[in-house]
Length: 402
Image 1 (tube, helix red, strand yellow):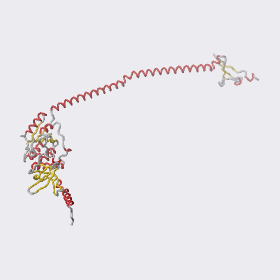
Image 2 (image 1 turned 120 degrees about the vertical axis):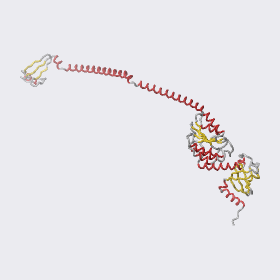
Image 3 (image 1 turned 60 degrees about the horizontal axis):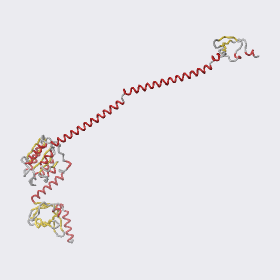
């Protein structure tokens, strides 16, 4: 037999309770009894139903967020987790949310559906679409008898009167409202609208509950057209607000968001026109400057402008060539005159002019430079400066020098 100490037993019970997934996140409905608030701010009470009693505690930081004063005998819906309180030897509900039973039940349904749809991805920011900047046709799903519709129509007509509005009337409160809203949405999906407003005026949580129904949320999720919701007052948040592409705090705010203000559009158009004019003028000035720069470059490279300079250059080259040729001819002439002078000095004719003669043997044309080159009987030609004679050798040099 295994014997446990009290400490071991209480610790074991606490481990069992803490490991239970149901008891770690639970809603409990009951009637408050023995309620007390300690000087520390913590609240201690019991939840009763017939003969069943469950101890509960709510710590100060959660108690400060209560929007009502808990009192004995009030039916409430409490959220928290169950654990074992060892010093007191009892099970205890540690409460973090506390609501009156009627409203609490609705809040519990709200939170449960919200968690479910969020887990399925219906609230994902990535799937949300932007509203069209300038819609031509707007669909409105709301009650045709509510003041919210008239407010939206007034705002749309004032801000952008050219926009066409298509109304899909539906119930917005009561048991038949969810089905009516879904039917109206499906009807308007079949039309050619650019954006849809789903709206109703303010009311209690029960009044707005139709917009917390799963069928309505899924119908909005399936919309092929961007949807903006404007349900209740600014502090009201419904399930459809999480599913819609855009959430507006009120129906009037939704109407202002879907259409631009024509006065603002006019000012924007004026500003855009001024920007366009400035941009166009800037581009024209820039192009004109580019054209002027191009013309300047063309002028600088114009062949007609370069032709006179080229002609002058040719004239300079011709003049330099002529001068060079003249100088070369002059040098050649001087050189020739020098050669002529040399020739004149070395010329036999000059020798002849000094009284000398050239003797040539007629037999073979040999110039006779010595007397032993001819013999008696040879005929020779003797050339003088002005004329010449033919003579016959009658005496040789050998005979003159025996």
